[in-house]
Length: 584
Image 1 (cartoon, rainbow, N blue to C red):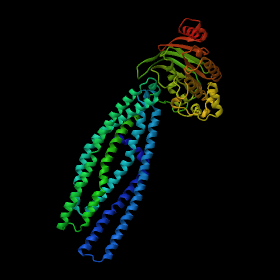
Image 2 (cartoon, rainbow, N blue to C red; image 1 turned 90 degrees about the horizontal axis):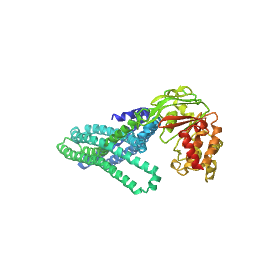
Image 3 (cartoon, rainbow, N blue to C red; image 1 turned 180 degrees about the horizontal axis):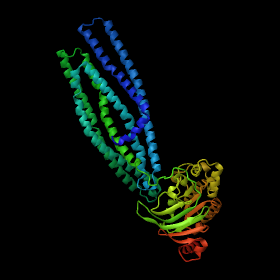
Image 4 (cartoon, helix red, strand yellow; image 1 turned 45 degrees about the vertical axis):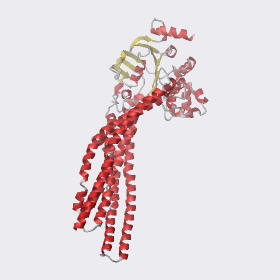
């Protein structure tokens, strides 16, 4: 139960609603327990008439009818309170589920990029859906039936003890035996529940990756291999669930055994006591049989609730593993920061923590507000890493980055990123309308601003060709668009934000040179007073920049503008001549 202590804060939050539910549960059980007493009284009335103690038939009928009326009334009132019980306690469990999912999701948003590189999407989805669902069952049904069981046992045992103390003691003999077996089974359930949740996460991960990469699967014709892989995971997951079910299945036979033994004891011991005169009326035996059967469901729920709690603890443990993690990139300044756009790298080196690959080695440069700098170099030379560090997706291993003369880690993280427009290499679009994808950069943008951004990204004409224009719903990750269209919509999303710093990471690689020229000309006007960094493999994309740096193996090997770099022999000149000849 240690892991489930995390949920206690939510119980406290909804304590009044929960307390009301507990009181309603107690009242509902009290009305339910009227029935055995009324049945026992009815049996005594009939027995007294048979023995001749009561001779008036009218009186007997009157008492029986009155008891029937009370039984029906108690059942109706108990039913109403049972309905209210579910409306309160189950409502609380749904609220806790809502709060816990939001807490997990907010934690996912807080955690840094390295967290997502070391955890699979399917596993993250499983924890926020399946695992939280298991915890909800603990916060609702488990608590409801636990209160129900405790209340029923306490009141029933008090009433039974008042009627026949010795018979009551004999009747509850099987209970300690059942409790011992439940304890043994619960330990096994806890272990197997953890394994089941882990395999469910594997299945979710496999499914998510299959759907995301369906085009690759079909292109390579590996559908059968993918199905076989999923089938193997499913078979193993099924076996883990069967192993869990085998243990859980022992509860029901134990319950039947308990009820059977209790009924035998009631009939045998109760009958013997009645014959010996230790019990005054046969109605006591009738009451006890009903009491025993009324306790059938509570006994069944003991096993069920124990199973729920064990599974919930296993799930909450998985959730807590993420909730306890702290982001490696922390917001060290709670106050908003003003960003102008000066950027300075001083002997910056960076090594990726997950791979230990050094991406940058003593990189230094400075860009003033309003300037455009281009970065060019071979694949893996560290170009994209520079942009990641400016956006503070990672912190440097050594050296220092300053924005407007202030160390980047001392700036408000939200302000820093709000003043940036970032277009990644792999343009990611959401399964929403084109308009909303562009407005993602500025949620309150007007339609005119959306169209202006699209025109500057040279994608307006393409959008108008769609039957629904800007209201066209895109497939997952923008699969319905071409690579160039996705890149240009991603550019529109960045520039509509009108940020102080614009970062373009090889975002024109999928467009032709003519379209590239149009976009770059438009960007000259847009980026006039903004700091812009363009990463590219194409000389045509970078030759208009105020400053160009050439990277190789994480080091700056050349610096200058297009003219100065072309005038000297080196990587830049060689690449320019090569690309010029390819385009002729």
